[in-house]
Length: 514
Image 1: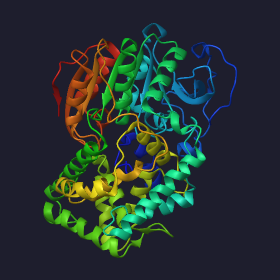
Image 2: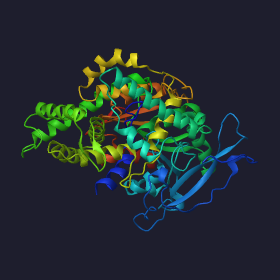
Image 3: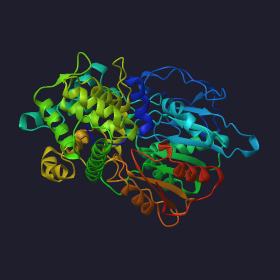
Image 4: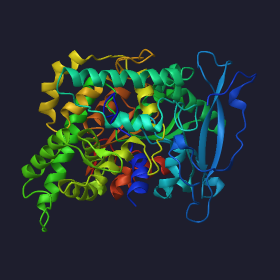
């Protein structure tokens, strides 16, 4: 997802919740004993909070099963497990099969970081009908997200202004403005979330998951991580290798890359997805309405963005579609082949001076609903990334790297390069250059890579397998388009994943689905 620390991926399912709608605390000091012994009070779920994205209470699953919600107490500071606590919001759907066949809970993280699992799982629960025959489906808002001690930074009006700024400065004045606005945002995060900000690292969330495992009554953590959820799963396996049950990582973050390498990889990934979009449009039997050749499609998009920098067009009143918002909307549409039709229509309308569709796409990426209210997706995303990532990049660093980024992607290169300055003035030091996911002794982890994935490029799957260590990661390749593989509905992928999670059948390493 785009933010000022780079285009860091939100899982397709998370962004699709917002897209479909648009287009169609911290706890105080308390005395507590062993938190692993706490009992969860499961109740019917309320409507999602504003921080979770708003909307209606989740509808029952096919067959009438209701979603249940609860809160789990976790230490604010894991180095002081008897100190202050925070509430971690959970959601579940009970297993549909006989109790004798139940394996346990299957915990989902849909990515971001910053995506609300409590609001996302119900939106796509029917996709996991087969898995629910033997598991309770469980997800959660990680710390800093949604209802779990959410990071708060700026108001909705301030965020509107924040996302309208020029994210690809061309001169010293524009560079100074970008750096000043980024510093203003980061200062607001520190002011409004000072208590929780030092405690939202991925290692903290992984420790929360191990507490969750125990509170849910499972000897092992059975896990399905998507996008950033693969990084969280890898970190969990590193910290608790003996507690890993059946785990699947889909749309895999490369754990060996620092933020610069990750941003450069995404530049290549989104450019590949744009190339594939242009090829698909121009190869159809009907005329492609946005260009006669692949190159013409890309040239016209580039011209549109250049024109928007000089003169934005009407978007969603009173906001205008800027170059930044249009780039953001185009990136959002490349997360799934299912969104390519929206991109075609949005470009057609933009060429005629109407920026509504591209702005709706951009809003969905940024966590803005049709009422103008933002979830805390961006605030949490930046807070977690900046707490995890040790490198801090300057404007001079970006200037030196721009040629390499532009070579990787003429369209997205500048945008992703300048995103690297997002953590420069962050209040909390970053933890490491990249996460440690080495997990000797862990059970097998199924690692699924998609060759056409723009946000978490395919090469990351192989890197994750290598980093997990010998005998742990098992790679499966999907030759497809979009972010992730399981939710593509590909029968080969779903058969392999379901076979592992339901029956413990580990597919042969190197299996390819197309």
